Amino acid sequence: MTMILGIIAGGGSFPSIVAQNAQKQGIPIIGVGFPGDTDPAFAKNCTTFTWLKLGQLGRLLKFFGQHQVTHVVMAGPINKPKALDLRPDWRAARLLFRLKTKGDDTLLRAVGEELEQEGIKLIGPHQFCPDLCAPPGILTQRRPTQQELHDITLGWTMAEHLAPFDIGQCLVLREGIVLAVEAIEGTDAAIRRAGTLGGAGAVVVKRPKLTQDTRLDLPAIGPETIRSMIFAQATCLALEAKTTLIFDLDETIALANSHLITIESRLK
Image (cartoon, rainbow, N blue to C red; front, top):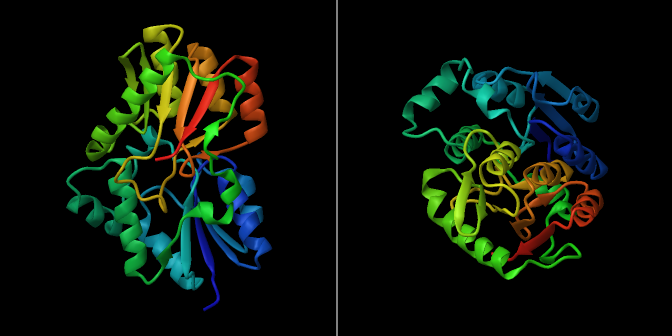
C-alpha cells in the first residue's frame, strides 16, 4: 500500500523536518496546522494543507479521510495553556467526556485511538529523522560532579513514580531538593521557575514517562533549553538516550560548553 502521510503539526521546526524527509522518500504530505502554534512556513512542505482550530477533531478526521491518508504523525508542541480554551466539536467533546483525566499522554492516546478507528495508522515522527535522537554518553566537555550525579539519579527515579499522574517529563533538583516539576507550563518555564526558587547549581532531568507512547510525544531539547538553563544558572542536564530529540545538536552542545553546562544522555 502506498503511504500518504498526514502530519498534525504543532510548533517549531520539527513538522517541517519530518515533512521534508518524508518527501525525499516520495511520500505525499497532507498537513494540518493550528493558528498561533504551527509555523505558517510548514504549509510549503505539504501536498495539501489546512488550518484547524484546537478541538476540531471531526474536521481533522474528515480532512484526512478525504485525502486518503494512510498514516499519521504528530510533530511539534502545542501551547498547553491555550489548549484549556479549546472549543471542542461533537467528536472531540465525546472523546473528552469519556476521559477521567486530561493530561498530555491521556489526550494524545485518545486522539490516536480515534485516528486508528478511522483506519489511519499512527506512527512515530522520529522514524523520518532518526539522526535527531540523542546518542548515549556525556555529550559535553565537562562531566557531571558527584552531587550532580546524585541529583540525576534521584530525579530519574522520581520521574518513574510520577508517570501514572501524567506529569513530570522534566524535573529540576538541587542538592536533593525538588525545585520544579513540569506540568502545563512546559520545560523552559519549569526550568526558569526553578532558577528563581533555588538559585545556581540545579540539575534538569528530562525523560519520557514510563507510560508514554513514543509515537505520540517524545521529549525534546535544543538551544532554547540551554538558554533557559543559563537564565536559571542550572549546571547539568540529564536526558534519556534514543527517546529524546535534540534539535540543532551542534549549536546546543556549543552553547552548553560555553557555559560549562554538562549534558548526560542515559540509556533507559
